[in-house]
Image (cartoon, rainbow, N blue to C red; front, side, top):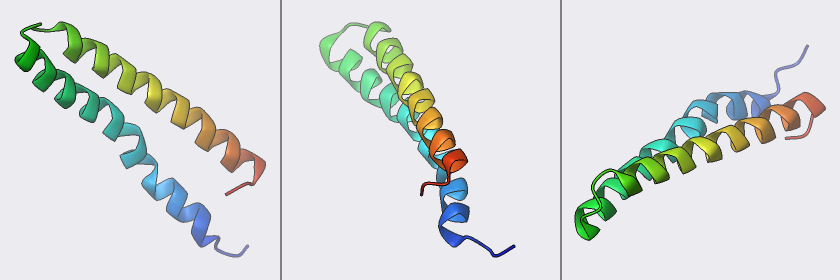
Length: 70
């Protein structure tokens, strides 16, 4: 069994790809809430949008890795 470096890199980057959208969404939402004075609404909306993007990316990555595409 040979080492597939591209597949190893994809698995290694999975953590950053899944955690960054909710973090970025929460930070951007916080600053937009502060600017627009709409306290928790945009923070929660963009956080949930980031979670949805993370689940979408997780599904795409796992199906592509399962099917053998890199």
